Amino acid sequence: MAEGDDIPADHPRHDSLVTRHRIEAGVDAGITSKQGLIAEGRGEAFDYLLGERTLPSADAAARTAAAHLLLARHPVISVNGNAAALVPDELVELAGAVGADLEVNLFNRTDERMRAIADHLREHGASEVKGLDADARIPGLDHERAKVDADGIADADVVLVPLEDGDRAAALADLGKVELVVDLNPLSRSAQVADVPIVDNILRAIPTVTAHARELADADRETLRRIVDDFDAAEALADAERAIRSGDLS
Ligand code: PTJ
Image (cartoon, rainbow, N blue to C red; front, side, top):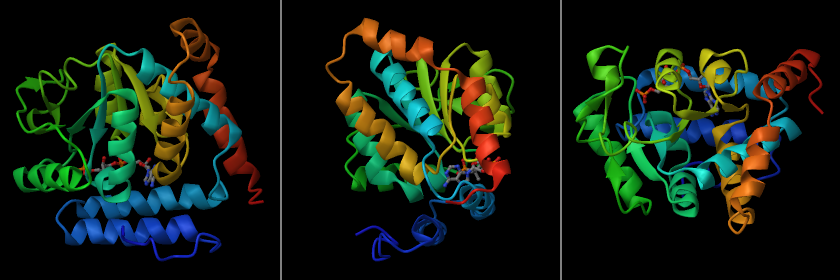
């Protein structure tokens, strides 16, 4: 049982309590950084204003992300200390559903945390976890933050980066990769530079992308292309911002 799973699903602050429990446990296990606690607090404030629900525009973004992942030559899911603590099973499931690699990629990189997260993902069913070779660099970032695997993120055409720092999200976008971002803050630079910003709690967003990927598994490439072409990132961000500013928590 994952941390926080004993909280009743109908509890009014269910998602917030589950996230807090899991992030706390992640810090205790050496997976999540202390900064991850602060990042979670910021995300939680936005989720509160969104009414802890998936907006229809976020669902459309998740569907578009699923289509991109299915169309990709080499999709990679980047995993940091918050994502690993919050949704390890869900990330492994999504990777399996779309044939993506999982790569540990940290903002505050330490060898201990890299290894702890890779082990954690393997304990949750991942067969292969990338990120430890660090034999390539993302241009435009300082040494530690630039490290990626040559046969992972460096080679990917589509990258899913949940809860990414703005500089790194911008550097990945500059490389011409299709960038799928999960971020509860529609004004964050990561969400703004993303090809597909999913403004939703990672707790809900990853299972939603997986559900869409399963439903689209047999779709032809033309159908998937149409989903991708019909998506408007600016409108998705504007819709999330409207929902937050309107303060309608229903
Ligand atoms: O494990 P590391 O070293 O890679 O560090 C990870 C963090 C998240 C600490 C690092 O990338 C960081 O400092 O990120 P930021 O710049 O604080 O950005 C995190 C973004 O994620 C913010 O815009 C938050 O609103 C958002 N966020 C936080 N929790 C969630 C979230 N978005 C979706 N779901 C959440 N649960």
